[in-house]
Length: 163
Image 1 (cartoon, rainbow, N blue to C red):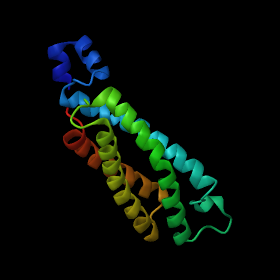
Image 2: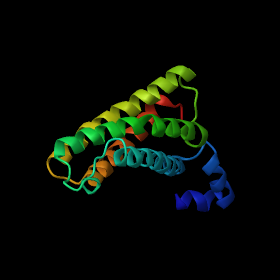
Image 3: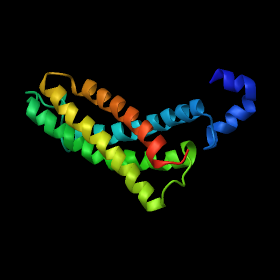
């Protein structure tokens, strides 16, 4: 990425940050930045829900919570957070990262959401398995985020968007 910036100059590099016609390294960097935003949205909703509606953490209950309750509540909290983070990801991806045009808008949104949901569902199923084996829900959540990000970038890059 630094070589591209040196060759093309800082001004061109800064233009690529807001352009959907950027070299792959810049595109991935922008994708990662938008992914951080989507993750923040997801975690914010997850934290609110998992601390209020569906408590999923031992420190929220004096007696602690059994693993089955934590698993179930973490699933519900993630399911509620998914639409919010997916909408944020879609809107920022079409604005800053990828070029639309491979599919009709409706098909594009549907495919984007389907891919998001498949990776989300995989992470969602792995989280309870890890929690049931004694892993802290926050660590399970981090693993869920990393796995989803990798699957989503590759799928969106090559299946959803034209560039």
